[in-house]
Length: 114
Ligand SMILES: [Zn+2]
Ligand SMILES: [Zn+2]
Image 1 (spheres, rainbow, N blue to C red):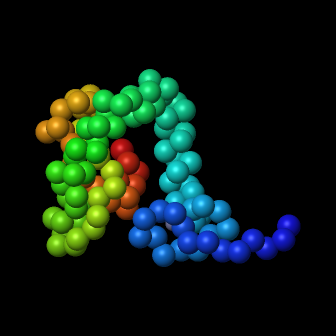
Image 2 (cartoon, protein in one colour; image 1 turned 90 degrees about the horizontal axis):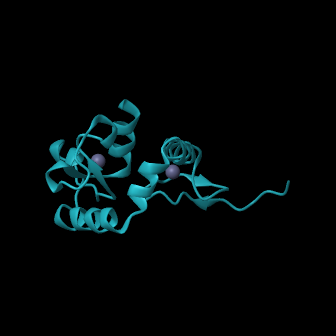
């Protein structure tokens, strides 16, 4: 296979170069996300729904910085509207009080724990 030129990873703020869209680490994170959805098509439908998308957008507008980083004194742009109590654990889907803004790194850490 010919060597492909290395491109920066598409994950925001990631310094890694990769032959694909994402570096090794983020490719794995994406795969995990994908598998999670595959196991639960209903959840996938929820996340693709316009009501959730609008809500996520509002959350990131209201709270554009990652809440966890902020608590540790770092300023990171949030990319993900996250359910504080995850849906899997019975958290409210459309309750703004159950939402927090997270950066990708913090979100990955959180989902890895769950
Ligand atoms: Zn990356
Ligand atoms: Zn963060």
